[in-house]
Length: 473
Image (cartoon, rainbow, N blue to C red):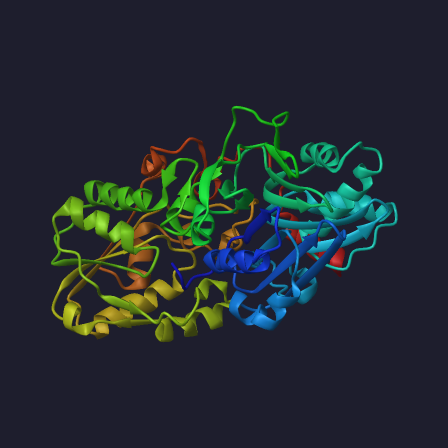
């Protein structure tokens, strides 16, 4: 699904070190590993704890474009946070890039957020009534105001963080860097992934374990839903006052968002995708000659389908590795144009074959139709679409950029109608009642609200991004 209109709200990484050696470069490598979570902007805030100086550099573009070696050489310190951003609101500006660094009466704060605060509009209005002035349209600046306000009445920055957690409704894996501390906090439902690792004496936090692996660190554990972890000179402290037995990790992390080499809350992402393919083969079998997948997130599910069905797995679509995820393109016309330059058909494997094409989801259905056309033009005899997720039927309020409900192909068409529209010979989705079975090793339960309308808590009638438009006009 690397070419469709679904995005996710970014990746974060943080490091607390006792030395100044290569800190910025480690964050750079980690952000490179998290680039799949956001390709529109990125940034690093780095702190020299002895000088009590914070340097922040951020811009629109890929990690490799923004952070040249001369830029990295100027980022000196022993504590840092980094961010790779996907802008689900279509406002890809430098002002919305993260981390956000502010100066206030108690000093400086830097914040990096992965997720979406569903009640941002409400909080923002209340702050504006009391004189707050905002320079960006992202949730992070709202959180910064709340933190600065609570810090004035709190004994410590971690106490202020704890006070704002009940005020924030939504999903977040967040890093807060003060002059002396690095604080990691995960929302009480654990909707977005977050883990902690060690690299010698250094403490690191990341949206996914692949970023910890990328810098030669070792994953220690996942941050618990609702947990606040404070890294400081004398070690780490865990606060669990907001931890409950409830959990609702976004199931789409396993279906699409996360890198396949990541492990999230005990579950291998790759194994989850394999299992999705196996289940599809059992519930929606078909006679065919080969199984192929759409690069990259559809490939493990295709392999699982092939293993379970006994139909040989072959490569059928080749990816141009120098083009990023085209779902990142904010305009539908740009996404559609990206398909033909991103993927090419391996005609020698396709011609005259009955094909099972496994993909991870269908959103609007326009680009999957292009894929079917490409394969049939290359000589495919039949195309049987198998989708390793249920139908998208409902909006997401927690950071997944699912279009308005009326734009969703599965809302406007039955499965048979959609099959005809995309030009396939058959179409089947992973049944909703089976979706949680793909991740049996997970330590957390899941949110599947975009498929079922079963959200982990009461959500607003409209996403806060719609209210944001009203505020901004």
